Amino acid sequence: MDLGLAGKTALITGGSAGIGLACAKMLAGEGVAVAIAARDPARLAATAASLRVHFVTADLSKAEDVLRTAHEAEQALGRIDILINCAGSAMGGPFLEVADAAYLDAWNLKLLGYIRMTRAVVPGMIARRDGRIVNIVGGAGRYPNASFLTGSTSNAALLNFTRGLSKELASYNVRINAISPGSTETERSERQLKSRIAPGQTLEEARAARLAQIPLQRMTQPEEIASMAALIVSDRMASMTGAEVLIDGGVMPSV
Image 1 (tube, rainbow, N blue to C red):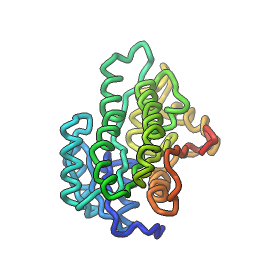
Image 2: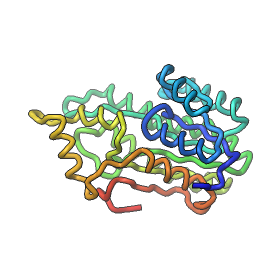
Image 3: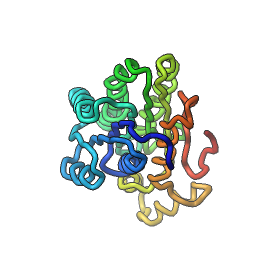
Image 4: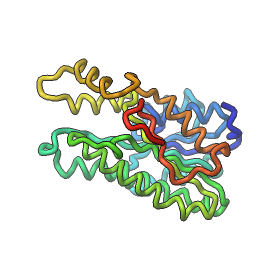
């Protein structure tokens, strides 16, 4: 898109698949030096080789791995101009069947993972008085349902975190925004769909029911989210901070 990002650097968590991978491809194509982080070493290495980007194998639910990832990315890239937080998943299920551990796992990986990674890279951005952070959150933070409260509660908290931090960082020319995808065509989305199939419902029926809830009758593609992320971190959106952009096929018309 020629967004003037050439020469910038970016760390993308969850960068080996889905939306994170699409963001890595998009930014690398814009001339950004990229580092990706994820848990699966084989998939991560293969992705990094295909994109010619740096990679860090890490479990971002662990505080020590977050710090190590930020350090290794800074060592490899020289600095981190852009952070895209995208690592995080949650297993759903009927409310009365979901144990505390499922909530804690989701919150520790996504909510605390995003907060910790932001805390790790922000000091360098503040020192340079320049930085861009995008939190990939999710539409469930706005329109939750009882079968996915593990994810929707962490998403709602992340929106609060993004808005709450934006004014403090603005004084240092560091912008933080959120993108909330709706149903997106990724492996993670397929796993979530399977975990929430109603009793007696087939997988194809569940897919059809999901599409029926989307006014545009189509799943969002990861590349659409990546395009918005690239635009947000560019100087074309230099006055945008503390905002959430929903990309959900019209489920909740809003920007």
